Amino acid sequence: MPDNAASQARPNIVHLFAYPFRIFFFSVGLLALVSVPVWVALLSGRLDLPLALPPIHWHQHELVFGWLQAAIAGFLLTAVCVWTGTERTHGWPLLGLWLVWLAGRLAITFGAAAPEWLVWGLNLAFLPLVMLDAGWRIWQARQLRQMVIMVVLGLLWLMQLGFLLDPAGPYIPAALIVASALMLVIGGRITPNFSMGWLKRHGLDADAVRVIPALEKTLLATLALTLLAMVTGNALMIGLAATLAGGVALLRIGLWQGWRVRQEPLLWILHLSLLWIPIGFFLLAGAQAGWWTDTVWMHAIGVGAMGGLILGVISRVILGHTGRALRLPSGMTSAFVLIHLAALTRIATGMELIPWQAGINISGLLWFVAYGLFLIRYTGFLLRPRADGRPG
Image (cartoon, rainbow, N blue to C red; front, side, top):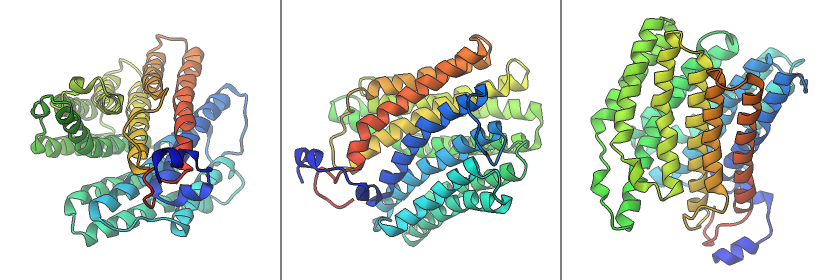
């Protein structure tokens, strides 16, 4: 089906279940649009919900686990089909998987009166199902290089389990360390490759982008050290490990020379978002020294890195996997800018450079508009068939 014919086809919800990225990326946009304004309303007392967790813990869980896991499912279950050459999960199995994720969101948001085992069980069931789907394909294809992703996801699930058992424990900060490792592993594979491809197509020096495999192994080791320090709670160890991890991550990202692709928003959003990770780790070290609160580094990772990278990746993946040209729709460059302004505003608020309530409201509004633009521009792509007439 030609691109113009696909764009004129009537939207149909059935297409959301034709490929994992469709339903889960739509859910990512929708949850991003809803959850942060709900959190701001809960925080100001303008809204009261029968949450299964105290509001602050609900907010932490839904962004670090509920929202992030939807993004992971959409990306991983789509990418693993390409990596392994296997048939995609679609139709009723995909609907069932998505309903498990949705049940978790509903249970933790409206389940104050529900049995605790039910709420926790629904929320803990989703990621193992994703890992089973992806892990089986990777194992069958003997692509053992990809198993590091399974290990990181297993750690993320353990952090979620720990958090649900003890919300006051170190599990949210530790989960952000694990999420950073996941972003640096996946981002470290796609970002320099996409950049080199773009530079080659435009007759520019693609060899300037340098990838040193040993740096990824070194980075993973420093991240593991930071995670161990976070779990033990030793401030000096955390500060030293975070500084080391931030330095290695910054060197690795710097070697990709992201400024060379500054003319392409679909690329600079990846470089800039990943840059928030070493910044976040340096801010983490500063928090251990008492220079600012933990919320500063956590929002650098959560809003800047996660918010920016997820928005950039899903914007690109949807175009490519719906058979469309990699041309960013109108308004999305503004969305990319706004998500990073949201991160800057939230960090400035945590450092008390902006009045707290105003900072929360402004950063929440910037986030809302960024993901609102995404839904406006991309929902039509997700609800319609591929532009090239291929299945999925």
